[in-house]
Image 1 (cartoon, one colour):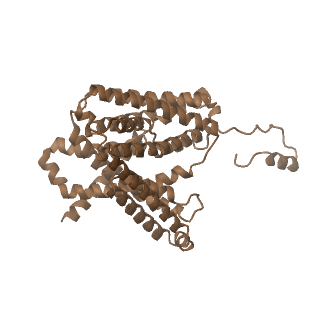
Image 2 (cartoon, one colour):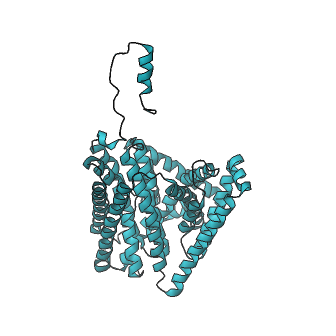
Image 3 (cartoon, one colour):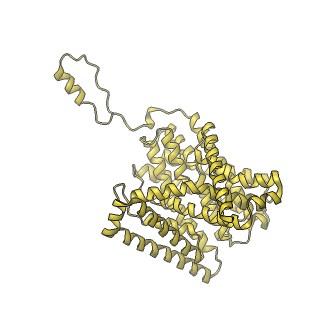
Length: 434
């Protein structure tokens, strides 16, 4: 009976996620914004309107536990594709990417440090928690400095900016920032142990993740595995998914979040669009993306159910202001120092303020490790939703000029064609792909 109950809940969650995507499209927002918002609010809405007995009837503890397992499995599979994308993204001009990455990372880290300092001085333990100060400050700083590559990529594609210099610089800089963010997140989790034994255990978990990823990569590079990827992509995707979940569970068993194991496997997959494992990665990522709304629902039940009233509205406002100021200000300054025009720099700055799913993954890791409290997790989730929802309207207010596009070839003189031969020469003078 519990299996049928779980299937019914899964069908309901996935149908609700589809509705959230439809609402987001009507509001001219990325679909993932609708998925996140509706998923986070679904559980608390049932609890608020129908009461605790009805909520426990819909989501009893055994079903909620199974739902959490499904959501975490979906997150692991999705992160395999995301981590693989981080290492295979194209790299445009180094100067612009370096400056934008520095600006959109360092200033938000500073704003996050200020926000953490405010919490340490002004808030009680319901918001502050009991994590070591160094781990807490670093975790909060990372939470305010991260950008969401998947949501950003979708926005850039929808606005047809993927072939522009602005789009390439922004997306590549976000990849750099997210890569550094994962490293800083890992450091914060290691510092959270507060003791040499705990720190060594965290290092052991990281070493196990690295060794497992190396073993997965070694197997994938063998001729038999390559033939499997080429001839049986579905079987290859199933094997990759099973390996990712196995590594993630092993790392979690050693005391580190499963997210680290999933990211390690994604980074270990041989890179390149022509790789025989590219279709398997795409399939695994699609399955994970389909199941990620379940993760949102479980997160909403955990965060909204445990933290209502613990954080005051000034803390929400401060998080949103510092989060937006750090990303927009740092992104704009970095783009200008990197040689971008004012209009292009404004676009870069606004896109950098996108957080979305990546932010939720990181704060969930902080919540599971005990570094972040449910109350502060709620603040950071609301900040992520608000700043992500700001991106679309702000982009629509920015005029798009010719300096934001890939430099075009000089126009062909409009001379009259008097014969087939000049016409052929004129046609041949037009650059390919125009």
